Amino acid sequence: MSLPSTNHPRVATSGSHIASNDDARSSVLGEYWELTKPRLSMLSVITAVVGYLAADPNKNLLALASVLIGTSFAAGAAGALNQYLEREVDKRMARTRNRPLPAGVISPERALLFGMTLAFLGTLILWFGANPLSAALVLVTLFSYLLVYTPLKQITSWNTIIGAVPGALPPLVGWAAARDSLGALGWVLFGILFCWQIPHFMAIAWTYRKDYADGGFVMATKTDPSGRSAGYQSIAFAALLVAISVVPCFYGYNNWLPYGIVAVITGGWYLWLSIRFTFAEKKEKPARKLFFASISYLPLVLAVFVVDRLFLI
Ligand code: HEM
Ligand SMILES: CC(C)=CCC/C(C)=C/CC/C(C)=C/COP(=O)(O)OP(=O)(O)O
Image 1 (cartoon, rainbow, N blue to C red):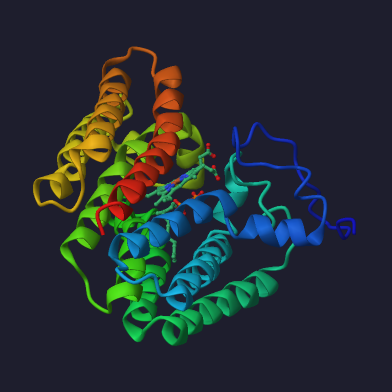
Image 2 (cartoon, rainbow, N blue to C red):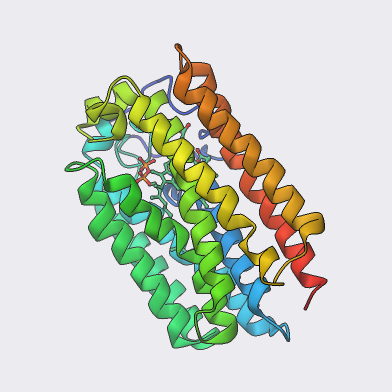
C-alpha cells in the first residue's frame, strides 16, 4: 500500500542519523510503526524483560509473555501519545518534522486513538497476565512521561532529570510482574537506567542544540551554550552509573566475573567518553561517540547481567 496523498508532503531533512528507515515507512503500517518510536521502545521493553528475569525464580511464562507484550504496547503508546502532544513543535525541528504527524500522513485524531488503545491494551495485559502492581507502574510511567516530562521540556532544563524517571521505570514493571513487590535489585536496575540516560541525552542535546532552540525546548545546552553544564552532568551520572552498577556484586546478587568486570570496564569507557565530550573544544564528534556508546552500553551490560544472574538463581 502506498502513502495516502497529503497536503503536507514530506520535506527532505538532515533529520536523525539513524532513526529513519525509509523501507519500513513506505506503507501506512510503517507510519504507525514509526509513531511508536520503535527503537527507543524496543530498548525499554528489553529493560523491562531484564527486570523480570532478574526477579523471577520460577519462570512463570504467562507473566513473562505479559511483560513482553504489555510493555511493548505501553512503550508504543508512550511514543505515539508523546508525538501527538508535540505535533506542532515537531514541525519546527529538522530532526522531527518528518515524523508521521508533522508530515501530515497520520491525523492527530488517529494518533490519539492509536496511542490510547495501545495504552489501554498494555495496561490490561499486565493487569491480568501478571498483576495489578505492574499495571499500576506502567500507568505511572505513562503519566509521568506524558503529563509531567513532556510539558516541562518547554519550561525548565530540569526536564531531563525528571524524564529519566519514566525512562528508568520499565525494569521495575518487570520486577513487579515477577514478584508482586519492589525489591532492592529492581531499584538498582532503576538506578542504572536513570544514570545511563543523562550522558545519553546530553550528547543528543548538544548535537541537536539548534534544533531544540528552534523548537522552544529548554535543554542544558540552551541554558549553558558552552556545553560545559551538559558535560559535567554527563560525567557525574556516568561516575554514579559505574558505582551503582557494581552494587549487586557486593550483595551477592551478581558475580564479579563476568558481570562486575564488564560493568566496570564498559561504565569506565562511558565515563571516559563523557570526560572527552566535556573538555573537547569541538564537541560534535565526541558527542556522537558518546551517543553511540550509550546505545551500545545498555544492551551489552544488561545481557551480561542477565546471563550472570540466571546462573546464580
Ligand atoms: C531523559 C531521557 C531520554 C531522552 C531525553 C532521550 C532522547 C532521545 C532522542 C532525542 C533520541 C534521537 C537521537 C537522534 O535522532 O539521533 C534518542 C535516541 C535513542 N534513545 Fe533515547 N532518550 C532518553 C531515554 C532513553 C531510554 C530510557 C531509552 C531506552 C531504554 C532510550 C533509547 C534510545 C535509543 C535506542 C535511541 C536510538 C534510536 C532512535 O534514534 O530512534 N532513550 N533518545
Ligand atoms: C514500558 C514503557 C511505558 C516504556 C516507555 C518508557 C519511556 C517513557 C521512555 C521515554 C524516555 C524518554 C524521556 C525519552 C525522550 O523522549 P522525548 O520526547 O524527549 O523524545 P523526542 O524529542 O524524540 O520526541
